[in-house]
Length: 236
Image (cartoon, rainbow, N blue to C red; front, side, top):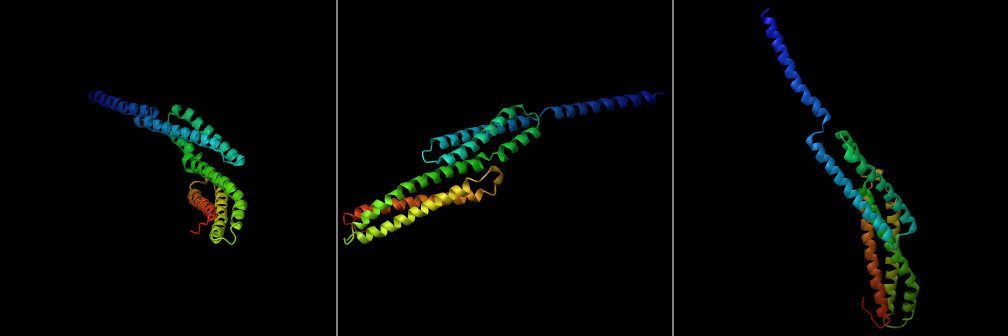
């Protein structure tokens, strides 16, 4: 009879101890850990940077004077879609209460949009490609007058030099035209879901645009030399 109260005391102590352990555990299940607030804040900052980037890209599209209407329409529609998606997350994330919600929103932010990995190079490269195409159009329109200038030099010291540069002019303008057209064809079809498989597409396009810019520089030089040849210039 004396041992029973002792056992009851031990049992009560064990129960109390168990409660002391269980209650904090229960509380931690319903209360986000301290790191949750940091993760939430970081995600909000990442979303804010994407809102800013989409705004800059939209401004680039609308302010471009050489972007074709068709390309501007495609890019504007995609930027509008991504802006809607990102802004929805901007409104949702502050109300997230679990790590799982944050993780799902982070995945949506990145995989459904790819603002920096896909949309940014796409907009920049299409704008540049159309800019090159516009310069090609201008230079191509100069070809008849350049050829007339060359023909006017027939029999004069500067004729051979002028003809050589005219042929170079036609060739490099053609290369720039081909490059810009290929860039548009390959880049404008890329979507967020294609990443990371489309990374090489943007890298290749960037090299092509650089080469096209160099070709245009050579064309301008050739055009200048043809003009000098009319004054008897025979250099290269």
